[in-house]
Image (cartoon, rainbow, N blue to C red):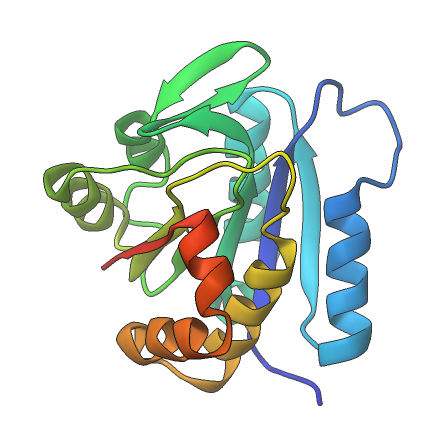
Length: 186
């Protein structure tokens, strides 16, 4: 089954010049072959690299409207991300993405905890225009979120109502949603 909605993945790495296939890239390739969900995968090691990658997607890719999910695989905690040992708050990230994520879902892998106050979440959504921001309340060194991420991405292909998506996600993988503390702010 080929879908018309895509995933744009940005993974933080120590050095973008190192050409290694990360587990995230291999997972996205498997998702494409199993589910037909295509993605663009980029790495970044600085905030400028993150911004350049997004700008390339916005201004050079004529299919940007088809990218429903911006998937960020980065270290960090609560309300920040870490790139090259520098921390950036989600407020700073919101300002970088200002008005450019209309209708998109920004999803964080469980490499970072996503723990926002209602005000922080609303600020991010208002400034970026994103439809939702999602991630996990608990990091896990033992359990990767990739399986749950893939199910979430698949459900997003078939349904536009984020509440229905989260309900179905919990119905299908309740224990894993609880273990990783899946969260969605909309």
